Length: 243
Ligand SMILES: Cc1cc2nc3c(=O)[nH]c(=O)nc-3n(C[C@H](O)[C@H](O)[C@H](O)COP(=O)(O)OP(=O)(O)OC[C@H]3O[C@@H](n4cnc5c(N)ncnc54)[C@H](O)[C@@H]3O)c2cc1C
Image (cartoon, rainbow, N blue to C red; front, side):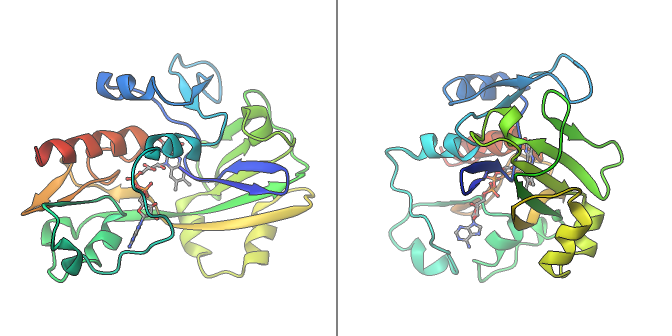
């Protein structure tokens, strides 16, 4: 859930919206700074999609308030930290969590992720129909285009987020930035930012909501459901596993 600014323009460049299926998640998200965006991107399918007017990261910002959160710190090894801790919950993408440990965890090695190249365009020459986003049917080379102004996130108009599909993103992972931009952007723009999400979407998931090994619990969206709601339910399951 990531939001970035380019000048006066604001972009959600990770998760774009979320849906709600379970009562546990419904109860939690009712406290979040969100509102319904729409009920589908090619007609009304009856299922609300929720967005955060302050950007998706305003949700995590609110949740972190009052907690001792250290940002801009990379955990490289867990073992030395465990002195003085009863337990640890690891919610980084699973390969990144596993890299913190000395021991392999074969049960989690099958988990795999799709990548996503996310392009943000400022003052883009692109008009999107209401509600301000297109989810493409084939998903390649582009799977999603959103106008962050029409959505209600960007004060400045024509702030466009483009997500490339998993095949395109893998094929062009090492492609120089300017070439990727030329391939994805149609029309003019004044400024851009390209973000490479290496662990965008779990493709092979672990079937349970979390995995406990001793006093370490692995959780996140690779456990049960690859979306915001899945990540939240996995976090709750991890907490319950340590109860
Ligand atoms: C491009 C894109 C579009 C998406 N669109 C949607 C959508 O429309 N709807 C939806 O429901 N979901 C969407 N998702 C998925 C959704 O964003 C995720 O399911 C959810 O954010 C996962 O939450 P998480 O807490 O499991 O992991 P993350 O949000 O990935 O959080 C893991 C955190 O761990 C940190 N980390 C990793 N390694 C280390 C380390 N060594 N030390 C310290 N910190 C570390 C990372 O920096 C990150 O902050 C999208 C994801 C992407 C990438």
